[in-house]
Amino acid sequence: MKNLKFRTVLFLCLVVMFSLSLTSAVSAHFGMVIPSDDMVSKDDSKKITLKVQFIHPMEGDYMDMAKPSSIKIFLS
Image (cartoon, rainbow, N blue to C red; front, side, top):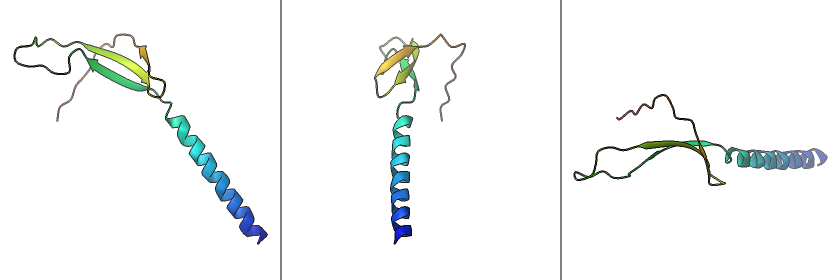
């Protein structure tokens, strides 16, 4: 009976630790490539500028980056 109680407490502690570890993954940085226009039609200018920024998704704060030397776009 004592062994079962110990295992139950241990299991609950592990579940709590695992749950808390997931919350730290949410505060990650995400790289964003933001175009100057989200739609280009026949009548619009074909020139689009791209802004590269990092964002904290939970805080909503953008951080400007230095201009990258190149950006590659792959279409499938």
